[in-house]
Length: 297
Image (cartoon, rainbow, N blue to C red; front, side, top):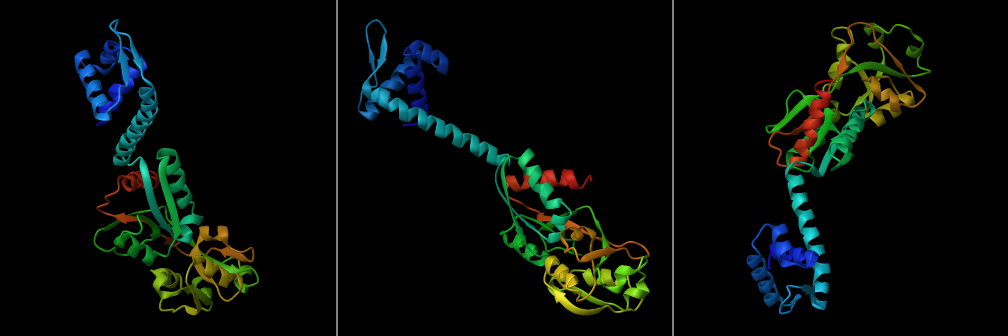
């Protein structure tokens, strides 16, 4: 028995007239009649009674079969629609990793909003992960898209496009002497105790600190933190000062204040990272929306 047999039966059950049902199905009445007879023989029951006056009525078995047949047709049609939508990237699940600054800059929120509006049947699963872990997860296939710090080079098969950059600023405790200064110069910074990211999470962070110091100066790092929230916690405890992306101040403790540094501004660069040969239509559809939104920004 095939789905077409159920559709033939449903049309006759609806019309209770073979000629009208055949016209609705765009097939010849004798063909329809033969198919219904085959279905009855296959089931071993009579589904319709036919009189000499061409009057058609459903039997009790036919009435019971109709309920199940209509449900099966609906399920089959839903499965057809789901398959076509999945092929177009309109349904599915996408796993997205992010670092904290991608949240504070509003980029992760924007990604989820885009999916809800443009791809309402695609579910974005978000997970906080540091940059190197995201790269490994994307390479292994356990993560689809990463919002992470831009690195100098990605592994083979990994591509990226930039998010809008964020200006670096100095974050200090409100009771720190630097908080009282209107102008903070590189020479002043060279004498400070810094808190910084751990080496495996740093990814050019130290290079950006050093770029704001006088030539040849080496920053004095007194403690390291595994992530941005931990870094802000150390600053709020007045352990040291640090250079951070200015949007991180959105989640900083009230005891932490931001100060600009004199000289040319330096910027933090995050990126959207993904597999170059992505097999999932849903992931490709989300990437298309992200690229249209952020690359043109």
